[in-house]
Length: 219
Image (cartoon, rainbow, N blue to C red):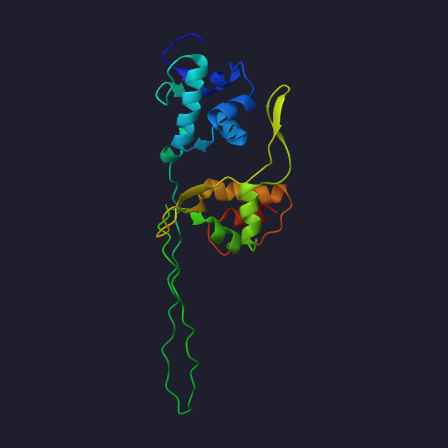
């Protein structure tokens, strides 16, 4: 390949003289992840570094995120917040004393959910599934295993890839070595579309601004 100041990830894929499966083997990166990086999905820096190191060895040129365009790092993903409408509690009329003795029922206690400390607009994958009446194991399978079948690659150099729900991960609070999955706003929108695409039954949630309410208005 011609030596120059800037390359694109697309041309580096296009000019490969090895198959995608061979690139996957050399870089020790899942073929599906390689395909998602090519399509412009966000990726973790360690994964990107492994890919660029392998491509540098193949082409005999030094490649990094500074001279390769079209690669998007997970750490640079913009955080999109949502404005929540806060409604004021209704003003109740004053209680007028009467001579009748009224036995008041004890008020039901409410408990505050744990603070997830997630970026604005994000939600834990388990909570997202619960809000839409989808079983957690089922939704986790949608993220990790996917549904349906498809092909990625060029010409005869294709490999099967199932449609899946994209998600983000972070270290689990107070659980060293463990990660938990969460969805940003775009990923929540895509998850609803995934359920529609594969006829997965789900319920409308009670969260203002969720994409599932938009679907109801469209129907």
